Image 1: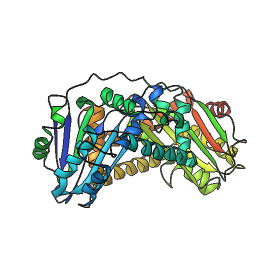
Image 2: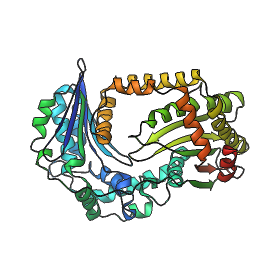
Image 3: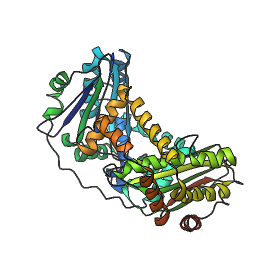
Length: 420
């Protein structure tokens, strides 16, 4: 495996990883402009823009964009996150130049046709409606909002329907003009790719862009709070969140091992206690997510109206207990799961391209996998217990519930129980 990283004079970054023996390639452009870069009146526009990139360019119709990739058996897609928007493709090795041309075209030359804008507006409004009808999706947006109220990082990526209904072509073009500068773009490619050839192909496209000033983003500040939406559903969807470290904080490795031991698999504490021993739920898990300046450890479970109180209390009891009696075996198991998941992910060209882009976006370098493994190996029982103790003593949390949740304890009652 060969990783190469170059930066053009205008700040555009190119990172590739050649994977011998692979017959396909995954490549894309990651732009460090997502939901948290929107002003409140723009909420949802980064996602709207992602949709409109596929709706025609100065040289291709929407159908041509789809056909050119699918005619060669490839795949083209995009996504919007809180800190990044990505446009990417998977193709066979002989079609890398074509995929790069199509991805470059949709990023640099969208026309925002008025008719297509109205069609896609309807699609996005349907997507918003679908999300609201999917409790185990929308509950995480509500938890994010409760954790970071009145902040860009706390707002939904899809945006509210009333704002999406009013976005204009000028609004989309304005967001591009403000945020789509070359210094905020990363071209990442992995698999059957040639770094020098990619550099040659982009010289007259991304290389011709001029730098833009990068607007400051609102720093994240975890506040916490509760959002409870009562609705007649079969289950209560319950989430609990605690502030965690950012990507750039070495404690992220400890947080991830802790979350894995707490609720990362069938052997985890929450799964064993809540589901296997007491039958309080079907699904329960914990995870530790991170952004550039903050993180969020999340616990999710779905249960019945009659069991929600017991499940919520058990969850905080397990958090408190983990601070005192977490074992070496639990930490070793969680760390092994994380290492295996990381290494298994490297078998996919798409996963490698994603990893390259995200690491360059955060650290402006690619972290060798050996370094990642070493940092995970350095997380010991003492570090995990100290992290667990910090969660308990600070007892600042966010909570979101959706469904027949009247019997769920209030968040202040749960945090008092946690710190007791």
